[in-house]
Image (cartoon, rainbow, N blue to C red; front, side, top):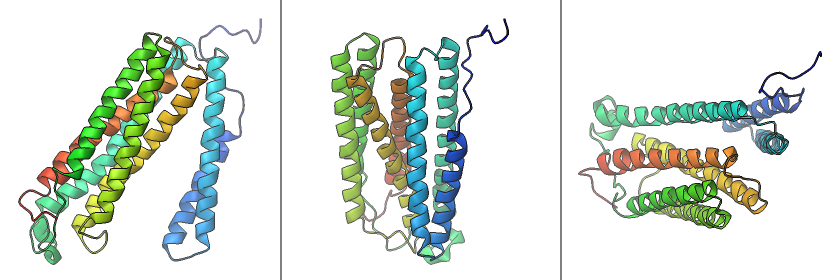
Length: 271
């Protein structure tokens, strides 16, 4: 018969959400760019675009959850969702490659910027002690990687209590990491502006901090869904994607800690 489904793919019905998402992102980007050009009224446009992007994410992902409960996420659909998450994480890896590239360019070729005295770190700059707050945050993230793995294995083995406890601990560790980083920024002895060191440091570590916040929100959503009984041992891509993202955040931090805090501040005066 015409219209009979003879495949395992899920064909989506027409939706306004992708168009709304792209227009919201455009509004947010234009607002941010013009706001940075000192057009104060564009701040409203930026916040409106941001709110629209958040709303788009909510309604789009809510629809994906409904599709999962309706049985539309067949094995082949789940496989392709995993492919999509892998490609997304790969794009995030390249995002951080840009910040590492800038850091290595400033540090390995300091003579190209005479304003910093031809040395790295720049002359007169006190750096953060890598083995104080940065080491503490490293231990926090490593512990969070183990707790999210605990939650994952609990889910696979049908232990919902272990899943919820593991998620709670991971979320609290993520919030603790963000709090420590906020305090670190508050006491940092170098500014964001006027120095290649400061700009490269804050952009790399700050965007990682943003990713930690996004990952924490991701896990909070998973916790709410866990309380609602959404995940099963055989179908839990939403949680699996959150766990992958969290492990990615952990690995990036290890590189940041070694390259920026340890190697980047080696031999310099510590604050």
